[in-house]
Amino acid sequence: MNPVLIDSECLQRQGTRLLPLTAFEEIFEPTRGKRIGYVRLPGNVGDLLIEETTLDLAAAYGCCWQLVDLNNGLDCDELVIAGGGNMGPLWRECHAIRQQALSTGLPVTILPQSYIEPEIGDFHRLFIREQASRQHAPMATLAPDLALGAYRWCSPTPTHSVGVWLRGDRHGLFQGWPSYGDPIRQARTVREYLALAASFEHIITDRLHMAIASLLCGREITLLPLCYHKNQSMYETWLCDLGCHWATSPEEALAQLHSQ
Image (cartoon, rainbow, N blue to C red; front, side):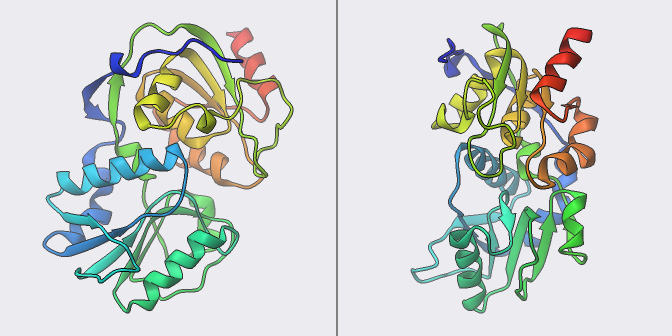
């Protein structure tokens, strides 16, 4: 299905963040006055939302963060590895980048991520974005997913009522369930992703950052589980207090809507 989407140019940024700037102080304040090399990880449009917000938050704290390439000469005091995604060796390319960063000898900070498995490494600072990951990283500091520091957006009237958007990869539990598809296949930029979310009154999804994009646009959102803990733990740790709903399946989410 191909819904008619809101034009991304119709979106207007508001002056408030989803979470206040102070929620991210433990991450950014210690980097003030240092030359920080930001290391990008491969990802999708949800990761672009994280990265855009990360660099905006760094600037808001008056920090000097610059994108670096680990394969070129590094002129910085410390490295920070992009937030989002999952620690552990399952995602081999991301794991290899983190290990390469450690091999430079510079202090390495891991921005808020989830843990599927433990990951060995002498990291300078380590942040987890939800409570369930603490079982694999008991010494890590809990901090919000950095996309939760993004600005809210004013959106025009939605063009559709309910949109079910389900991921089609190995972590999804609902492949084959009728939906509009995987939202990361429908957007190339952050604004397109926000416009996609803004097109619906209510989004039902198992894509975490589609849920966050919906909250940023002031839409109703029901988050669904994955085959591991990330979504449920993010809901319990942060999103329930921001107005997000939870259901264990698309059927349950639709039943909740019909009962309202």
